[in-house]
Image (cartoon, rainbow, N blue to C red):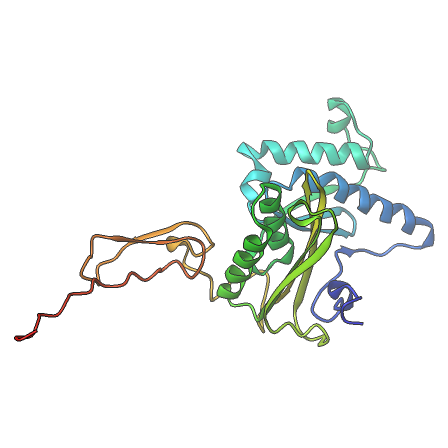
Length: 282
């Protein structure tokens, strides 16, 4: 049953926590659950460009919405203008406030809304961000094989125990849909103590939707609020970019070495071969 159960839901209370942290009685439960769904449907398209990982909702005396994003600057905006706009939209959705006058007024029945933006410290260990990256490349007509292989190299180089990626649909515009997956390292989906992160993303192409699934086995002792100890060197294209550096250790020291997204950004350049002197009589 390991392949038929959502790894995230299976590990709630063991290595994962609930995304909605609140309690309500039977009369209010359905309404609050519907409100959570509406909040997520409203925020997901707005925060997509900022690299949205997940949204946690906490309810005590106030409603606290915690958004985990890769680029928090795009959410906050200049002088917090975009964040204020998002909060006004939530006021309209939850408290049904439309006009500027209503936004300034406070009623007894109004829900106090608080928005918290948290930066994802380790995007390479976040399955949602990795799946979105692969789906975005497929939408830009990149090779689905290369997109998966580069993502696997990047995640394993960051220090993950294992990763599995799968794409399914009309790959390369084929008439019959199929699935194709790549795997590296050890996942251990049947072990509940393993910190497994799973995500599903969709790539919208002219041939239809292509589903992207990602499983990541995070390293032992991993904490989301701490940066990774084995983070790749960003100076040399460690995140699959185009790395460039001067090579001073070889005979042709002025020739640069490049990295095409594969490897760790320190592509080796072979030293020049000096022909040996010919022996007498040859």
